[in-house]
Length: 369
Image (cartoon, rainbow, N blue to C red; front, side, top):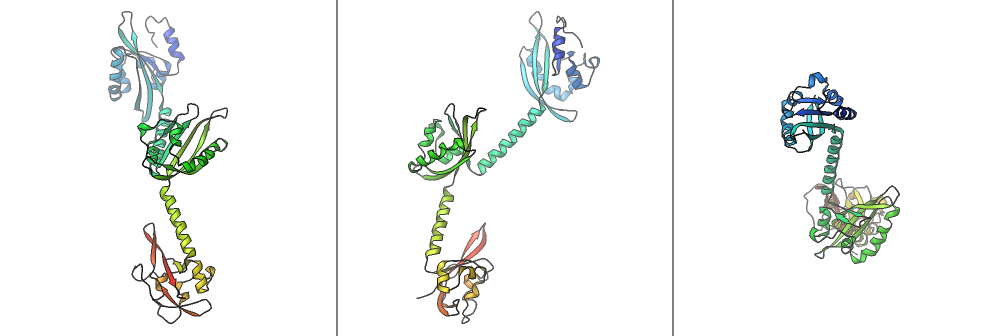
């Protein structure tokens, strides 16, 4: 190790007490000083390093990336930047600090270089960034809007997707909870606020409510989230996600209506799978045919055959063969459970699809009084 001129040994002492690699180079980028940590990192002795150039030590490619920063420092700037490098077959990242060394004439005649290995920190940052990207992709794919409310300042923040869900212009948002309250459907506001008041005592929460967009459209929204707490247990922040579930609510309502019609219609309705086996019947079917639901489920629809017609009459009640024609009525007879024969008019089947594939057949049997 060499002593920096005029240091009286104190610079050496300080440099040796620091675990980060430290070196001093002159204006020609020639090493004049290096602490033990710097020598250990490059696996060199002082005699091997001092008097050589930075370029010869780190390699020309890496030096060409360092040189613009070194020249900035020679102009009197304090320079600080992260340096990614491939050293000895290993990807590394260093936090580099360059300090100009000023002589008695106020001229920069050298640079004090300090490098801190932040490879582990950078790897963690990259992993966190990748996780955030994956999270953002999941949020975007599911159309989830994120909100958070700071309980210390009262500030509320929304993600871009949440602005889209609520139909709100960012410029008009004041970042206060009242902005949200004004958009909750008046008939739901009291119940929603009561539900939110319970958040403090629950690890997670979820609630569904309606909102009114600025254009007057009413949408159904589902929200879930949690409370973030300080070390003393006090709540510092609420964070949650919103999803527009209007289409799902509409589908659920359609299913409820269909179920009501299925149960209350006076026509016998039969649902079969693609193999022609009965998967459901309505109460009218049981009342008219005398077959209980348990007796009918899993059986072929030909259990109604009277023997007076060919199989084509009952075939629309779930047989997978034939052309796909929805609508139309045939006339004939069908057998009841106790073997009596009744006139009936089986409709041509309607078919339902799931995931773009034919999933089931639905047909009705009309038995005249």
